Image (cartoon, rainbow, N blue to C red; front, side, top):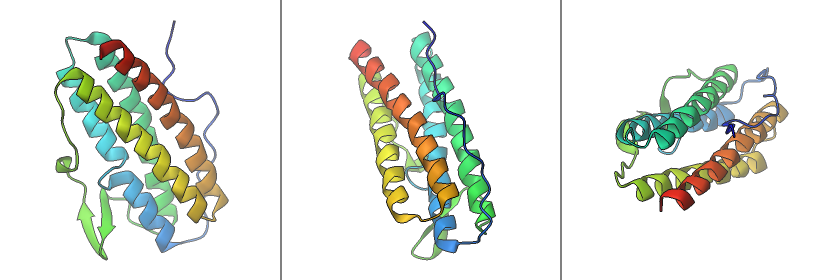
Length: 166
């Protein structure tokens, strides 16, 4: 049985035409904040490397990271269209803060590693759902809803992994 790592629905167009600095900052935080797509990509790359003796788990982290890279691209494109420079940075107290691998936690024991990754995916679903309730731009809302479908799929995959390797 082949596992899918992204939802089957197509991604909506990424075509914001109105500049909005508040929405741009939200997209930058989704890209490169403390708990962001960049954090997920780096964490899953690390997880893939240290779980190499568990080929199935390593492959799962690799494939999820590829989907997260697409999310990073979507949020970066939206940030740029909204008027921001899409660097790997976020805004804290009106100051630019560059993304850092120090944002991540790095558990090494397999059950804790999977549990931590699961918690990060659940957090992403909650974060993006809250953003949908704040943002009034339909292009952004449609993209957030589509990305949530992928994150929910990742939650299911990681729950199954946790049940297997706990």
